[in-house]
Image 1 (cartoon, rainbow, N blue to C red):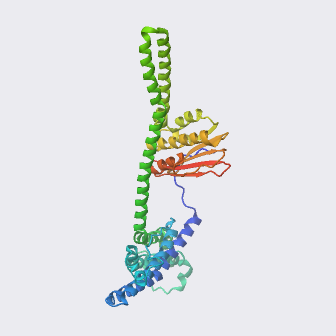
Image 2: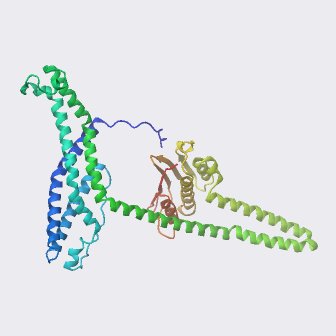
Image 3: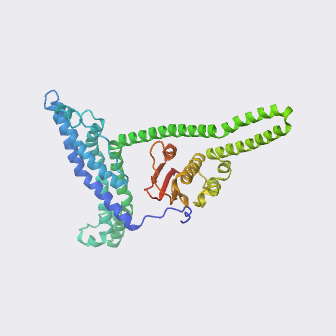
Length: 434
């Protein structure tokens, strides 16, 4: 494993990437015009015709067909937008009528779907946006090509003395001056061409994304937040049950025995001082063991070393107590003051490693375990791998299920790869916020 390199300035995009992006953006903007015209004609004509005939039987089928056509245009635009914005294509969920639905229910299904009306609105409103982006793109392309190559065809153009751009600016009408002026203007258009065309493409793509995927993105965000809330509730309940079980099975039983031993020692003081002394010694031993168990429980919740010295030191202390030999690697930048993460993220990362190592010790039968923790951009990557028997999974009722809930609570993802016979790889990704 290699140490992550320090943050550096963003390198400029290579010329090949600029050329490919310029070609893709230009194609996106220019092909948007015929699509926008066709979409506008279909949307306006179909909506007007369906609305005017809505009092008759044929009006609703026409309106339904128009919404289906608008949906087809919208699906095509979502693919185009995902390419330009270099993002994952988001598909809104259209609620269909179902395979057993009757004819009229099928006709009314798109009319009752809110996203269908957003698709129709996009078909009407995209044309004005396109009529802004396309002329600007064509103007910049024309200025870049015609201006930078003006010296090639200047001698073919009939220019009257005293006319043209150069005399208008008071620069005279000499051919060299005229060619230099137009070339400078062309170079300006050529240099700014990628920026302007990219802006026009983002104008069209941003408008399309707002109408065609905005509602779906909001629904996905709400769903993720609800899943995180449920995961938080589940993780908290599991943690409380685990803490209650550990306290009941350990310190509580020892405290009960301690009380019984002290009561017996009080009764033995007068009759048998030696026996009372032995009972008190046993009670002291019980007290020390109880304190040790309480310290172990507190380490599982929030070890002081994690708060005082950070995640690398806490993981090193955890690995030193491992039953199975552990090969630990932690990104060095996490130990620096500027590289420390938010306390909640550090606590979750520590919990992930601690729980994973506990499962390795109890169930895997492994001979060695590897733990790697690194920061990758805005994510913290945790990987725990062992050479054990495998068979671990995230099914409910298993320890890793509660671990997945806790990771999801903080906006992370936990994955487990553990075929029968091993090896087992537990991988968690958490937001690396400070």
